[in-house]
Length: 126
Image (cartoon, rainbow, N blue to C red; front, top):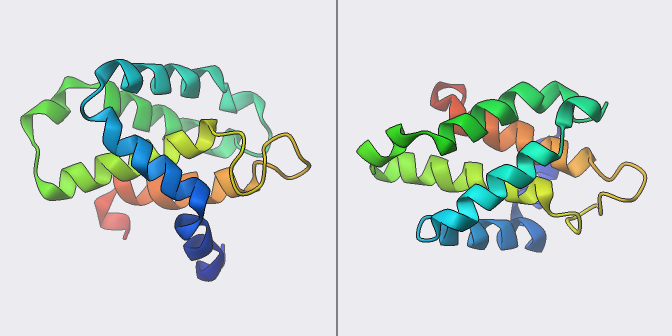
């Protein structure tokens, strides 16, 4: 994907909204679990456009749901966690840059998930 497209999506108001929501999840564990449940309910493996990212999303859900996060609260880990949460929030937001109920509505979700999760889950991939 062209870097300018990625930059525009990450600077968009819908992604900013997802980032604000991600910061709330650190203090509201019930909201975190609700988000992870919504992500699981998307069944990405059944969406031909998002299916290639199903494994990456499952890895992110497992990582966020794991207790290992509690042991390390370094700034880098917190930033990776917040970006992962923002990307997953963006996924379940049906009113994002390209609303999901329109033709091609998951293209922006694919770009955001691929870019953010690849970097958040594999810091060496930057």
